[in-house]
Amino acid sequence: MLFAEEAASSGNNTITIGATLVIAVMTLAAGWRILNKAGLPGWGVLIPFYNAYLLLNASGKPGWWLVLLFVPVINVVVLILVMSGLSRSFGKGLGFTIGLLLLHPLFLMILGFGSAQHVAPRRA
Image (cartoon, rainbow, N blue to C red; front, side, top):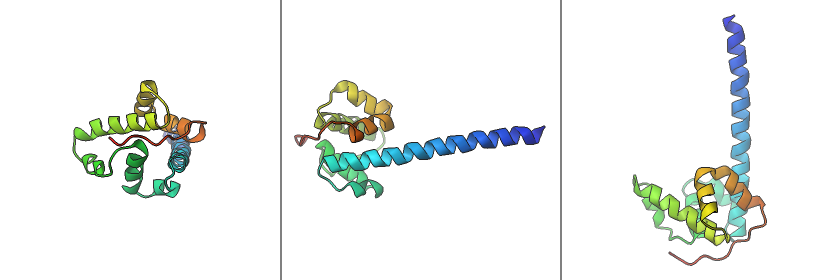
């Protein structure tokens, strides 16, 4: 009986891992498209830290804010400001910013694969 439970659990894990991989690949593809729309190198989404730097640029935030992402509590505020800047740079509003914060992969896919165009943001 224990073997049957382990087999069922193994099947559930396989589905979970598969779904997670699909979401991860789609999120990477969306990030690539977002950076391309912003006139930045899309392949940069694959490189740790550089991808955050490029996201800051696409959001209209200065690159040195990357350091602030390593400071506890401040990083949450910076993340909110960066998502707000990203929303505005694609002509979206507060509701879209909230969506980016709460359902990040889904809203990245909407930006990346949707019709929204990047508008050069003002530097903050």
